[in-house]
Image (tube, rainbow, N blue to C red; front, side, top):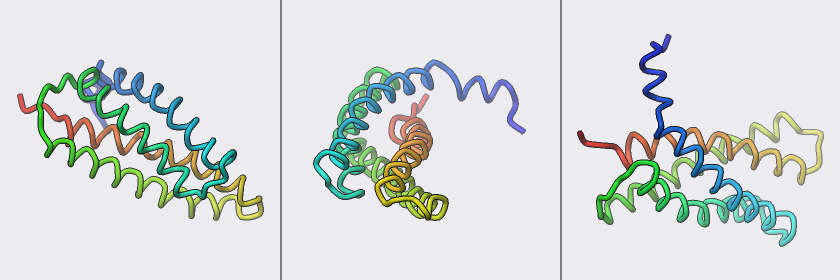
Length: 141
């Protein structure tokens, strides 16, 4: 059981800033992803990945300077950010697609993959928050 003080530390102002940045990323990235899939008829992986290419660029700068107040200039940090985003993406969408196919086996492919992308987004947000907070932009104080 998590103690109250640990929960409040986890849900501090940094968490809420991350959520605010996430809302901006979600609006931009989701529009790109669903337009790529439903308007331009790109496949599941290209469509969902386009969300994270565009959203990750926005996310890096907003989270670095606004959320985590990190002024460090480092190519290593950029590389770790890219690795974090990539790992979160592959795990989230790699789990979401088979899970959704199993749950919605009787539905059309377009329904399954749209729902899968929504589930993947949710899992990605959770994994990405912890990766950015505890690995990419962790404070060394």
